[in-house]
Length: 308
Image 1 (cartoon, rainbow, N blue to C red):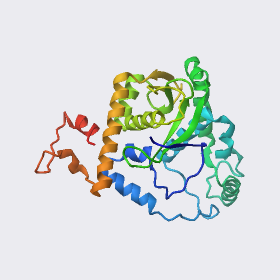
Image 2 (cartoon, one colour):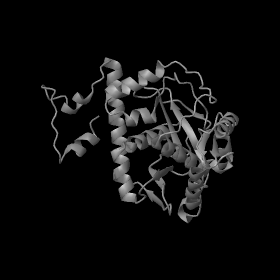
Image 3 (cartoon, rainbow, N blue to C red):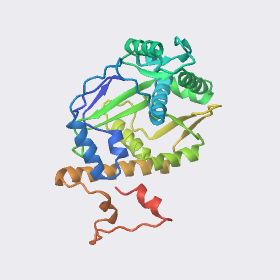
Image 4 (tube, rainbow, N blue to C red):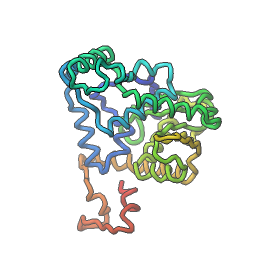
């Protein structure tokens, strides 16, 4: 039976950990991509921290979106520790608010602010207000709030040291009910319509992550329920009026997620054993001796969703 260790939330882990994360497993396009990223992580040297007094690099739009998502998760699920991990920068407090950070006084003020909040993620004030508005929208939803404060493990990482795949696995789960058979996932999105979002999960391979989560908690010998069978989604839109939806992923989605995860882990197990990491040639299938796959406009998406 797999052995599991529950870790406290928001702990910084060793970059050279031999555990394959749920994200690495789900997001890899092919075994070849997985192996590249996994080896890169485990062979990486720890880089020194950059002196914030010398570098002012504005985050990209993608980085801002990711930071807002992390901030919403923390403010919704763990509000007590939000200020330990995030700070917001109010440009109206600059010595010269109408000028950019290139102004020497503004630059000095900003660098001092960064120095005081060195370990924290910095949100622009507008982004912080957005995070608060999204949190409030979730808290004002009667269905969502009932699910959130019902007793469970919040933002924990589940570790598997030994399992049938012989792969060390770890996965972070937003919320696991202690005495009820379901997992809760909080997500930010541009469209919180249940059907639209469920299809988006498939497009982004998040269903594989859900399969991983169910497999992990169901193999925990200390679980208090017979089997975790359900995943409840609390989704909040990123733009006003910050609409919220709360829904179950249906049985077909759950079975598809479990099958996709098992298929991926079986493939990775074989790759580790043979030390062969196929790329897109895996599309051709084992019975195709030419190694050349086929693709068409109409069936490309269907083929891509389950290539391994």
